[in-house]
Image 1 (cartoon, rainbow, N blue to C red):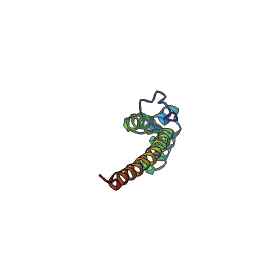
Image 2 (image 1 turned 30 degrees about the vertical axis):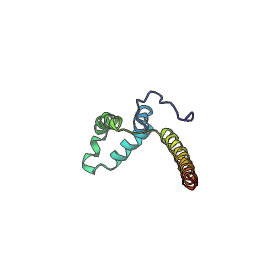
Image 3 (image 1 turned 60 degrees about the vertical axis):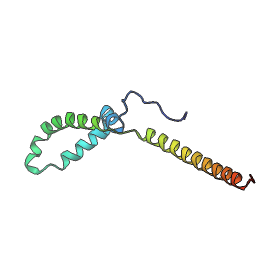
Image 4 (image 1 turned 45 degrees about the vertical axis):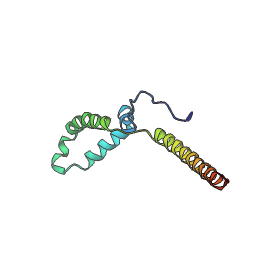
Length: 104
């Protein structure tokens, strides 16, 4: 369990909120949205960008996401837990066989 990274102040939020804090993923999403605007509203691009940013930041921060590091750590822990469970199940089956094989 030592390899699970501690949350660095993102209150359990993940890439979306972290992205909103450092700006890169949010800016990429915002640019993508603005590039797909119809020609008729492209003149309002600056105003839309100014209004979209806080809405996107707010909505993305409400999502219950985890960072890739947190996901990977949980995946590793789950794999170890599954392996341990399989080992314990095999031990239990072996013990049950030994018990049933013993004469009373």
